[in-house]
Length: 197
Ligand SMILES: [Zn+2]
Image (cartoon, rainbow, N blue to C red; front, top):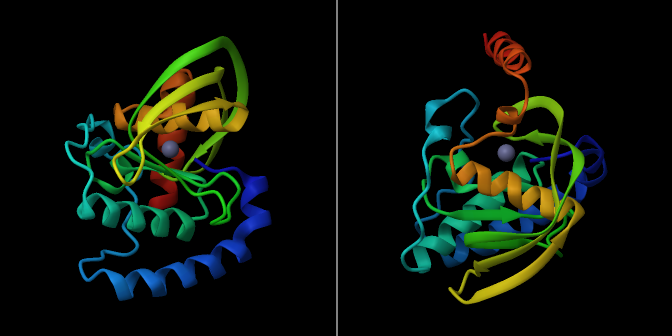
């Protein structure tokens, strides 16, 4: 999920930070995949339901590093493992677009604290150049595991609340276009097909 405004502000900063991170990471880990390819709508693999991570280990952390690399490279603020064709319940996020605030959620669950819905213009790295308004509850409690396998809770409002729901949807095989009318969805499908041709 990403937003035009954020994208414009953070491109250069993200690029520099990603370069630095890559160098350190490649020295540490030999089985790196680096930048992964992101599945694009309407790829049926985006509809697969992800399974819980049974044990958080070095392989999970390697996946997380690659997901960050992939997300930053694509100027995104959130990425679910489903989008890189790994069907495990892992999400990375960086709402500020700087490495100062990278977030990792493994096996995330949310509890809605306030069902009042907020409208947000959502985008998605799997649905390029498409932004539509979606309404979601604006205040939730997240429970998840961190990259060391420790459980944590985080109260989320506004963009973070919207983003975590968007990403958890990916793990369920759901996309933000599913909230739109079927006419709108078909129009987006056609546009993406035309752009790829
Ligand atoms: Zn998305």
